[in-house]
Image 1 (cartoon, one colour):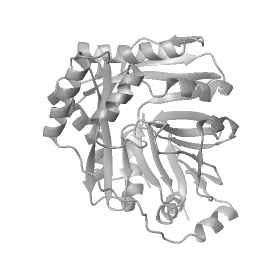
Image 2: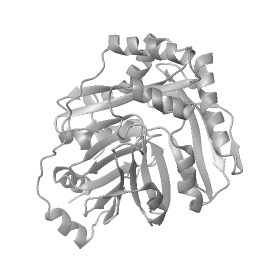
Image 3: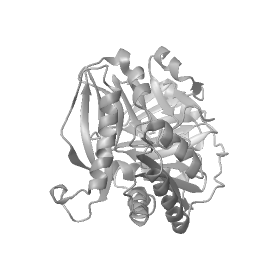
Image 4: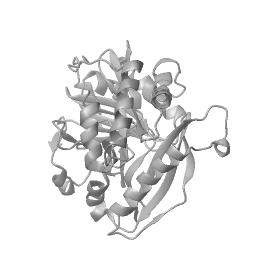
Length: 368
């Protein structure tokens, strides 16, 4: 029995588990909860000692916060596994995943029509920015492809947080997130202001030129985080262009003089940032509810490990897809301001979708 045989057994038994690989790392971690995970209130996260968190975009929605308690923590570097783990894996059978996807994706024509309405709404209101999202589904791919997809993400998006989270008979999400909400680094807390998107193609990062619209969008995010962290000493780096797969973003790194006891308070302060919601926050959430024709569920929420193997990190659930038995549904969005051009915004979401779609359909895995 090897690492991915264990993962395979967990998938087909529909066990509650999370598998992830941190950015710029090689080792893959598997967390298994033999009790099925639990729904938890945000304020109760402080009471937990360690685990993996799956948090929805909107805490006030019907989508619960899930907490995966680590009955077993398995590392891809392991050559031997405990007798308890082997006994648990051998006891598993196959269960059919119950979740089905019945909603349709918005068309290009519908998207552009809606975006024109949003731009006019922004011009006539106090809203500066809204992050408008859509879905893109791939038929014929599903749970049987999860391991290959994860391996491909691992190979191709080394500087992203690669994950698959499965909650028994509830949800299943896979992705490669480029954005940190909050992490614990060198006795400091760390976050980023991330916005703007361009397809890189054959260009180097030094050849990327940003429009005023993209620079303003980044400024919204940076200023929002700076204001939210006013009660903490913090430093903000210069704006830089960073790579995430075949696309790039504008980023500021932010270090906060706070310790792990402040972790969940700062998470609560930051989420949702303008990078995945808009600005001002309240008006943006209202506009998302008005114009998006689907439930984001866990897209643009956050997920990650809390005190697992000594590490704590929450990542924004971006560049991600919801997995069903025979369908995978990608979620992609873009920041919309009064200067947005609907056709260009559609193209941007197409680039983002391609980041995952090429992995889902075209690419072959090269790791064991």
